[in-house]
Length: 110
Image (cartoon, rainbow, N blue to C red):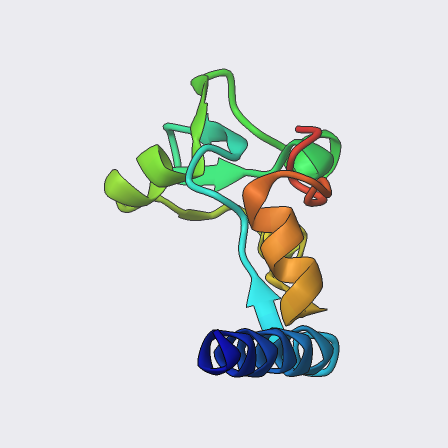
């Protein structure tokens, strides 16, 4: 019985140390493959919704996901799109919360 309590205490201490460390370790949070983007088929590029007004796009457009655009080997339409889809530098704790959906990523509202 005493041995089990000691193991449990070590486990609790280890989890506590890892939780504290996750507040200081940095990690990049990337947009998911399901992030909504606009395909510009004429130029074989994709446009972030935030950048559409300034994109000077043609009429040959489509709506898709970032993963589909990358599978088609489309490139970002402009530096605005590149910056809009740039990874966020978060703490490990925040990044995990964003990945599991507790906190929204900036790309979730597109």
